[in-house]
Image (cartoon, rainbow, N blue to C red; front, top):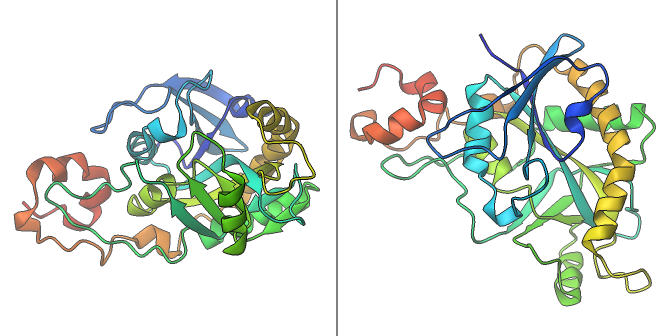
Amino acid sequence: MAEAKVGIIGGTGLYELEGLTDTREIRVKTPFGDPSDAIILGTLNSIKLAFLPRHGRGHFISPTELPSKANIYALKSLGVEWIISVATVGSLKERIEPLDIVIPDQIIDRTYLRPNTFFGNGIVGHIAFAEPFCPVLRNILYEAAVQVGARAHDGGTAIVMEGPQFSTRAESNLYRSWGADVIYMTGLPEAKLAREAEICYSTCAVVTDYDCWKETVEVVTAEMVIANLRRGIDTVKKIIKEAVTKLPQRRDCLCASALKDAIITSPELMSEKTRKDLAFILDKYFKKAK
């Protein structure tokens, strides 16, 4: 029996959702090391949830050092089918203002130091990633944001940078020239790994600043980001509470069968260790293979 249907990856405070009952902590061991922190299990309106503080409680893990493979694997092993990723982002567009909510639909990968796939080590898989965020979950999050009265943006292209430094002004203007809408440090490899694990994944992003391209406002600082996150967290809580009650009972999006035609390696040639490590992901298709 699944421990949770919905996973929430976010920062401090999300496990304090009003109405969350039957809460308990669980530490999950994975073949890829320990997740960022203990996972908090609970129930909201009969929906089983799993909360994972992305950077650990106390925020001690940098974006580059996040154990994303362990995080996604742990949630998958608990039965999670939907992941709502909560993130803070900088705006690259005048019309997207601080404290707005953005539900992006596209992503550009500017990371270069992070393991970004479960595959390799004897098993080759190539998922389709043209639509990096689940369209079903995206739509539910956007409608929930509108319903709770947030100033929300449906869609947008997100840049995921390596960090931990913020952008130079030249970089910020380059990303604006590409037509990107927001920028942050944590959307990848989470989105890629979630797709490989056949989990529906979408980001609910709180805009905290204008990045550094807008010279008429103060320079972006960590203090500014945290201050605006705290102001926006109540809105995010309301969105989550509204969204989880609208998830369909049956998934019919491409996320749910992302691996159907993605595995290239013949079952008899697969590494036994990798097969064992990826059992929660692969056994749906290769349970009978030896």
